[in-house]
Image (cartoon, helix red, strand yellow):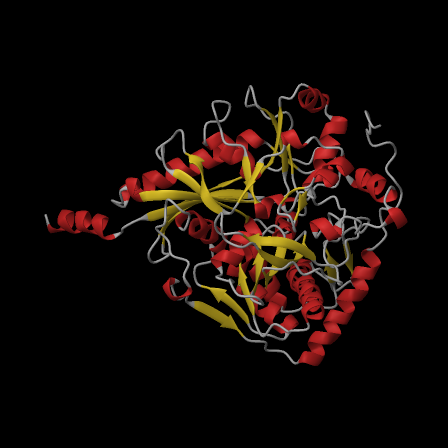
Length: 533
């Protein structure tokens, strides 16, 4: 009897809960937090299939993405019920997502008109070259003053341009005013709020700032940018703040719950790490690696290859905050590659053990430029390279070199950030899936020569989306006042090698990067550029 009493009294004690959909490149998660303590109560995760139809192409199925969200929601609600937690306590849902990934669908049927083109995808390289060639002085930074971004395969506008040029169904849907464009957040929110039966077509400022169609000063779609890419504005979602009620869930166990938070995954991690002050920074180790530094309410342009992006705007009447971002395309993806392509490990967790067996790469360097190089080089013609091999090199050395590559890439970005701001970061706050690899965290501290600080609850991306949702006007169950934010327990990794050795290894890495450059230099032979004007 007492057990039942205790359980029912526990249910009352919890108070309001907030959920987050975390739709990443390699998996979808649904997580439920206690709005008062920020404690993670339950979650469920589903892997997402990536397809590589041609070399350099990366696609995902938008319907599989949506299905995975429903599955994660259902499973998590079941788990909560088993824990005797009443799901009617979930007061809001936040959405956070892989950014830039591009989806076009038919607003009348609700069907996607093509697979989602993932941010890593390189098929737009010839589109990018064509666009850069028509700029004065062939300058990839031609639009940077408005967008904060270089013209690159990475961003949505060039993917959308490719789809309109190469997919007949999309070309026709645009002409007949049936097409809707969105990044993953827009696709999910539209579907979850009713889809073809009145779904809300919106995005938030952080996701919009990754399209190259958004002016980060006016904080809206820019007619000149849309003309430049020849994209009709009517297919774009409405831009909203990162924290307001967009619409209500229309099906499933959480029907009627407001969706009230939306942040691109890297912005969400910045919020989840509580980097609300100018100068605070975090590094997220996911499929890629993303270092963001809050620069306050005025955009700062980089002279060292970093992006200027919208960090968050936590309410309709709240100011927008900006960030400098260093984006690395391949971090966790290198682990997946060693597992799926080379078969040298069976599970991701094996990598740490394999690398720890040797404790050194023995002079082997691995530059995983599978999608060209992102920050600070923005060199789409680079390709992956493994160098410094001898007869002595084995798979353990390669595993170690792969982990070091993640750390060296982070160091390059941190250097750029320090040069841009003139203020050196005293320590690095980290999060993301790869941070469970303790060897990686120690290596990172050694290579940066500063301490690395990891929160004990690694799901900061989902936490950020939940905070935005719970703090929204009309929900107001989560306070973002500094004095109300819960103290985060964390673990600190201090540098353990001497800086001279660290510098020597870093110099070698830079030499390897130079050797990876200018590999794919010839334009692909008419890469299906049909329908181009």
